[in-house]
Length: 83
Length: 167
Image (cartoon, rainbow over all chains, first blue to last red; front, side, top):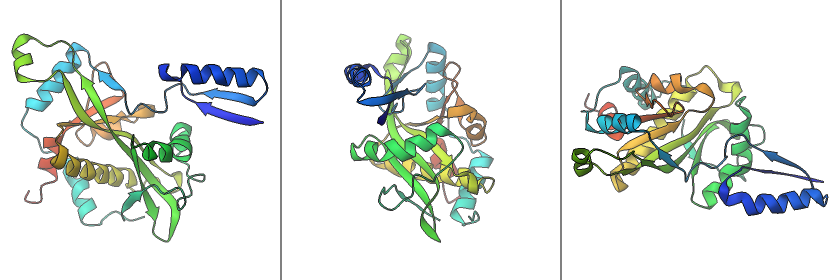
């Protein structure tokens, strides 16, 4: 018996139906469905009006120095982190 | 230490365990396929003494940010859609926790993204902070959206300013 794992996305409906048919016919034993899509790489992130405003403000602001980011960069560059 | 692209023939994906099942599964079963389709790139940090051993990994891709309908004066100034780099996943094997490997991988990812933005230009990095790790990214200057709690953002200009050698 074979176990097949897939994520649920609208593009997968036909595939999901065929898998259910396989399940019914005993070709596969289990179908595991993740709670979140595995591949969200092509998703568009749709922002609310408040989040859109935050996004644009961040683009307009002058860049700021973040000490923790700067420190991590320097540790990286100087090879201070070891396995 | 340096990261290389995931090589399924070389890297032992099966034994990687970051204690988050979704991230383990992604590395084992999806990362290579997504890379072959040019959907994502997964970079792994190898243990130099045993290169098949994966210390940690991150996955990069692009995403589109679609803004809500903007007031007219903002529409003139900004696009409604923005391309952004997305750090879709970042994980460290439990054997290597508490050694600042996560922050090292984040800097490595941001350096790659900064280099890419110099070539193709995009203004923002988004991180998908699964499983409540938003606080980790906030420490490094990422800001959290109000409605998209698991998504955080950092302008490319901020990365460039912080990574400049002449500070």
